[in-house]
Image (cartoon, rainbow, N blue to C red; front, side, top):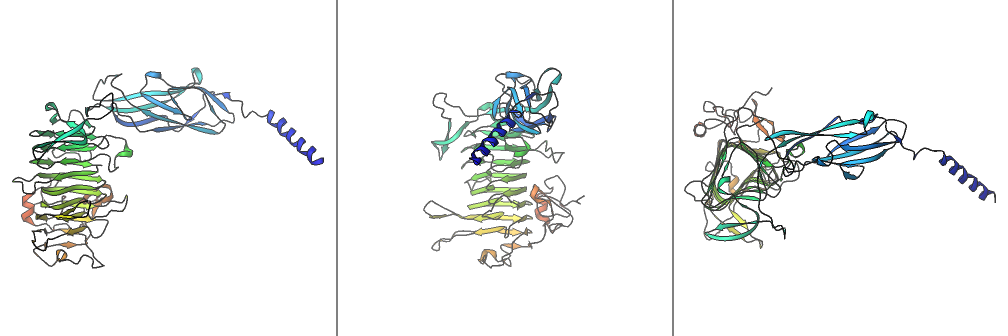
Length: 520
């Protein structure tokens, strides 16, 4: 009986006490809100492409539970900004409750839609405000976004079925329908200029018999799973030029993803590849930066082309999720190229072919996951789904005055298969190269790793520090203390007389794409 009476008294006290509390009495805010920032910068976007999500934190530093009478965008329903307040999406909100000494998050996104608001210039600041309360108690936070105009290239989509247009390609003279989403470039799209950036959805294909010319200073951005495809009988000419500003790279042609926010600046695998399809011809790339792709350049076939299928000079490829350059039984000449940060190999010379690489820096400082292959992979075969190997000739693989280095060891794999009944050529040579190769387990014991054999290796430097300025930030300029300093062969230096920055190297050539500098 006493126990029951005690419980009744406790319950009564609790009910009486709670009836006097003001936990659920929200006072109107009085303009004393605090904010994590007074301006939210949503960085840079392209017109018609949504931004990332940004946040603003709102603080109630008072001892009272408050209700903010209104939270809204100044431009109302016409605003290109979108809010999410306390889990609710919209552009205006009433009586937003905020407990004493508490805070809430507001999430913000934007899209500038040219269908409802035309662009008045190629680049401008798009602004709005978040308004808190009204009248004398009103507070605000500015919203600022840099919007860039662009030329969009995208495949058609059937409005009824939602099916996206796919490419029909010429393969060995036959028209073949593929499942690759994209379309051929129109005649008026076969010259890319530096007037506006280009945004590509799906694969933009250079038609058979046509040439895509990309002028100095052009900027090409790809959506996810998109890229550039150079068809059979077609040609790609990228005509970048030396820039005056090493950061702006105003004259280089730059290929990257279509997300411009800093969060995406170094994310690999944002788009597909530049695909030089089999029987595309006379492709040239000069002063280009290719970054954040799945494969930087994929070059297929034409190992015995009269003129190499690809000539690439003064260019850099980095932050790719698989290969920087992947050649498959192809022919490539490369001079003053810089490769780094690839999820597999920075350079894959596979399934045989012909490769001549001079004064180039082939590095790999990938640190995002385990990688299976070294910076440089050379082989002469492919295998099918049933593990059957197909072997072809490695006509040439010459690396002259190069640096081949990285954060793994070794950074070279030479993988040769031979048909014992009918051996085929497997020709390679490294001359005046700095190479990271330490084989403590004696695993790499084939004749291809006999570094005393001058038919394959001449004037080599092994495992000495290249003294890169900041390899993990793709800054592979070498310093005074580099083991590559002054170690170049002058014959090859005279073939490529200036480095990637335009510095003459003929008097005392360094290895790699850069002449050394004194670090500050």
